[in-house]
Length: 151
Image (cartoon, rainbow, N blue to C red; front, side, top):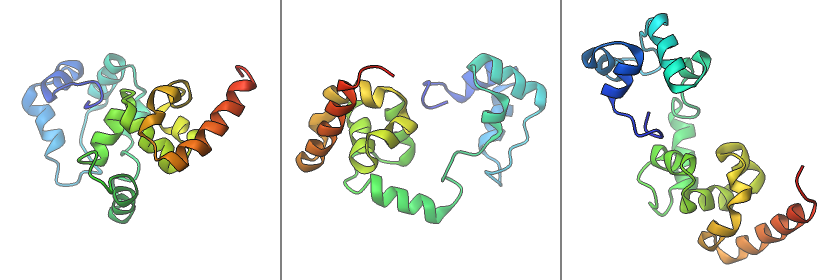
């Protein structure tokens, strides 16, 4: 919802429910269990072009506070992004600083698994946001992979 810039009202329209019904999904006492009828989940799936299975799964690492805390320490140490959600949204949108953070912390291969092929394709655009020593390592890898040609 956040990545696509949708509001709860937009989701309600996609699912064929009222705004109040969609609002209840976000006010659940148990964030791991939200009661969405299968027909509404199916409409959401079609409208958003996302599988029903993906919609039904919790977001990775956001359920376990220890994992979330570790990720926040690793990725948000300088408060460049206010939250993991904001970093994920920025990466999904291809924002340079978010892609740079993922590549700096995890490397280009892992950044590609998280943000898609743009982690490699856009490297020349965002590399200036990476710490110089790490940037040199990643540039060598990027140059090597680029010299191999498309796979």
